[in-house]
Structure formats: structure tokens, C-alpha cells
Amino acid sequence: MTGHRFRAMECSWKAVLLLVVASLTIQYTAIRTFIAKPFTICRVPKHTGCGPGPSASCEPQRRAVSHILILATTRSGSSFIGQLLNQHSDIFYLFEPLYHVQTTLGAAGGGSRGRPSSSTSAAGRRLLLGAYRDLLRGLFECRLHELEAYIKPAPEQHRTQRLFRRGASKALCSPPVCAPATWTPRPPPGPGVRASDGEDDGEGPPSERWEEGECVRRCGALNLTEASRACILRPHVAIKTVRIPAIGDLRALVEDPRLNLKVIQLVRDPRGILSSRIDTFPDSFRAWKIWRNSGRRPYNLDASHLSATCQDFLQSVGTGLDRPGWLKGRYMLVRYEDLAREPERKTREMYRFLGVAMDTNVRRWIVRNTRGPGASGNHKFATVRDSAATAEGWRFRLSYDMVELVQSLCNLTLAQLGYRLVNSPEELRNTSVSLAEDRTFLPFL
Ligand SMILES: *[C@@H]1O[C@H](CO)[C@@H](O)[C@H](O)[C@H]1NC(C)=O
Ligand SMILES: *[C@@H]1O[C@H](CO)[C@@H](O)[C@H](O)[C@H]1NC(C)=O
Ligand SMILES: *[C@@H]1O[C@H](CO)[C@@H](O)[C@H](O)[C@H]1NC(C)=O
Image (cartoon, rainbow, N blue to C red; front, side, top):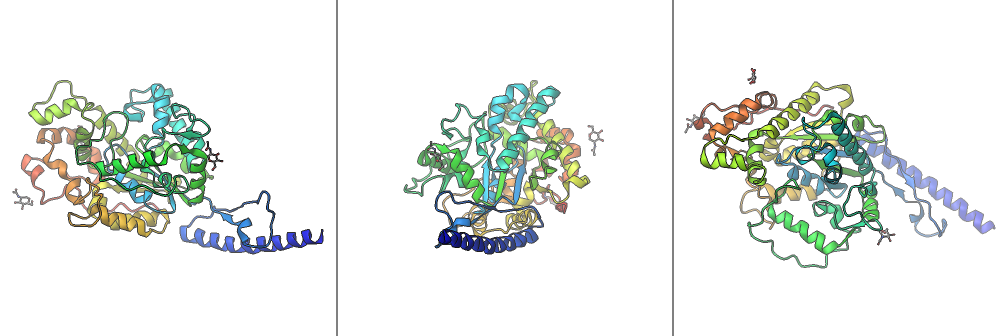
């Protein structure tokens, strides 16, 4: 009896000390990140009680202090910016989880590639966006089970083989979710592998897509309970999506006191987006491809996707640059061209905005993947190697007529984002002048 009481006292004494240490740590974190809401959960031991020995019985369990959303569109470089977060060892990153909602509810409200389009009924649009927000909230709070309602076939015993692009998430391919590597990497296949059209976003170069496949083969079914635990153990959660049109659609999440949401909106020159989409989605962009190859504009050309992208940018960036109170400290605009031009500086700016210290994994990844030929490392990120030139590579792939059409459809967006218009084929091809004007978009702090 006395022994028991003594143990209990010792336990509470230790617990108090730990709480003091923990609260100091938390205060420090809070000051560092200007966030006042993180808290700890004292994990109560189930059977062992508070015995002598290592103080593991009351170890503070960290909760996410930042919820990061990459708001992007297809072919705007979102896979690249996602990697800058995925590589960080304190960040739990998910690549496009809303894909599953789209495939389930898509008939009700999905426009092209899951973005509610203008032709979608208002009710369908509201439904889809509401479902997107609900799932995002759950995932930011590490309830990965909330995905189960949308995954087909339905997971059994919380295990699934079908999480979309699971391999693009480092946390889901490493311990404790997946056993340590006991495999020898085979050399990736040559450049013949093409991103597929249709279902996915076609993001990521062949070498990375190959690594993703290896993860899926090696790790087997994903246990969503374990994935949720791995999420809780990392202080920050980041999610990338191309399925939400504008920052205004996220207002309910931004204002949700349970979250600490920070949104990085990634934009790119719509002329570059078009060029990249034609290469990546040959089926949907057949008419455009014909135009590009033959020089003759097909009568059935559908430019609605492009107008929609430009309208979404205009609206969303407009909201962001207006700096409404609810976005204070929560919105940053990044142009892909700036990221490609100065990846390290831009990445540092992003991390400063997020209030997260950059780690060496991220630095190393940038060096390995954005320097020109001659840099060490096997897996080059083909789309950003010699990245500044690649970002404007569309200037040689689109005809002047096509560029003119985009410029007339997207003139306001181009002006808003600081993309220069060209007025002649010569100007289009003359790369001594960049078409991305020097513009500084400071985060709204
Ligand atoms: C999934 O992981 C949890 C936690 O590790 C474990 O308790 C459960 O048995 C696992 N489920 C299956 C089906 O293996
Ligand atoms: C953009 O185009 C619209 C209609 O095509 C035109 O009315 C407007 O003046 C143009 N704006 C700019 C900034 O060029
Ligand atoms: C390209 O543009 C630069 C700057 O406007 C100009 O000086 C140069 O003559 C141009 N080159 C060609 C080949 O047109």
C-alpha cells in the first residue's frame, strides 16, 4: 500500500517535471512559430503503471502545429513544391488525397479532373467542396480513416492497397508504416515511361514515379491505423491538391480554430500550363496537339479548361492580394517560375512563412534535383533540372497563334501575376528576355 502510494507520488512528481519541460518546449515552439495553440497529450500507460525506470510512461505526444495546404492546379509544378515539403522529416505529406472523393462523388459535382466546373450545378459544387473540406479537416488532424469511405474497393480491417499515389508520400514509405528497406533498388527504366492520362494528375518525372512503384511493391497494403499514428508523430501535416479552385473555398478551414492552416497557392504562367498539359494529357488535348503539330486550328477546340484555370487564378489571387483579415498570416502566393529560378531562396521564404525550420533533407533534395548536369545523385527531377530554362520551355513548344489565344483568354490573369505578353513570334522565341517580370509577392503576415 505504502509502496503503491510512494510510486504514485514519484509518478506525479515526474509528471509535473515533465509537464514543465514540455510546456517550456511548447512555449518555445509557439514563440518560434507565432502560434499559441499546440498542446500535449500525456499518454497514460495502460498496464505498467508509473514504475521506476525510464520516464517513457509520460512522454509528451506532439500534435501538429502547422497544417499546410498546397493549392495548385494541374501542371503548375505542384509535384515539385510538394517534394519540398515531403522531404522534411517533421512533415507528414499527402499527395492529392481528394482524388478519392472525386472518384466517389465526381458524378455529383465533378468537373474536369475533380475541379468543380462552371457547368456543374451549384448544389453539386457545394456538395463536392464540402466533402473536400471535411476530408481535409480530418486528414490534417491525422484521422486517415476518414478516407475509407471513399476508397474503392473498401479497405478491410483498415488496410488498403489502393491509396492514390501512396508512394509519393515519404512518411507512408518509411518506418514505422513500412518496414525498413531490405531491397536493392533496381535502376529506373529509361525515359520511355510516360505519365498516364486520365485519372491522375500526371505529376512527377519517370524516375520518381518508378520509386513510387517500388514503395508500393515493397510495403504491401497500407494499414491506415499505422498511417494515422505516423501522422500524429510528425509535428506538421502538408497536403497538396489541384482539386480546389480558389482560396475562398477554404475559408471555413482557414477560420477553423481547431486548425492552424497555412495555404501556399502555387501559380504558373497559363501559357506554360497549357504546353505542359498538351504533353501530359494527350487524350484530352488531342485537338490542341493537332493545332500545335499542323499549325491549323481545329474547329472543335475546347479552351474552357484554360479559361477556368485563369478565372480561378484571378479570383483566388485577387482574394489573397486583397488581404482580408481572415487570411492574415495564412496565405502565400508562389509563382512556379520564381521557384524554378531560385529554388533555394524561394524554399527558404516558404519555410519562413510556415514557421518551420528547414532541414538538411530538403536542402539536399534541392541540390540533387535542381542543378544542371554534373550534379551528383541518380534521380533527377527532369522538369526542373536547369530549372529556369525549363520553366519557359513552352516558348519553343507553342505556336505564336496558340500563345495569342491564351493571351486573349487570360489577359487579366497574366497582368495580375506579372507575366509579360508577347506581340510577335520573334519576341516569343527570344529568351534573352524572361516573360516572368520581377515581382515580389510578400506573404501576408
Ligand atoms: C494495423 O496496425 C495496428 C497498429 O499497429 C494494429 O493494431 C492492427 O492489428 C493492424 N491491422 C492489421 C490488419 O494488420
Ligand atoms: C482583356 O480582354 C478583355 C476582353 O477581351 C478586354 O476588354 C480588356 O480590355 C483586356 N484587358 C487588358 C488589361 O488587356
Ligand atoms: C532579343 O531581345 C533583346 C532585348 O529586347 C534584343 O536586344 C535582341 O536584339 C533580341 N534578339 C533578337 C534575335 O531579336
